[in-house]
Length: 83
Ligand SMILES: [Zn+2]
Image (spheres, rainbow, N blue to C red):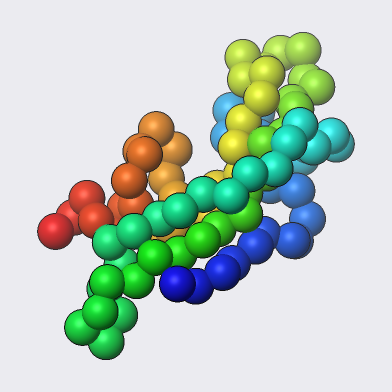
């Protein structure tokens, strides 16, 4: 089990690329299926939901994306989907 948290600056909105000013909520997300050293690894990742305040944007809220671990519209990890 690996704990990870996103604590950098807010990620930009995927639709309008505008940085979010407000955090909607945070939650823990468990991502399985990343084999490490022959063992099944579970990543416990804290991700954030953001509000998008841009009126032109169709995305009212969106979830933070972590490169290599999460991918938009996929519930499972990208690594697991490619096996
Ligand atoms: Zn937006």
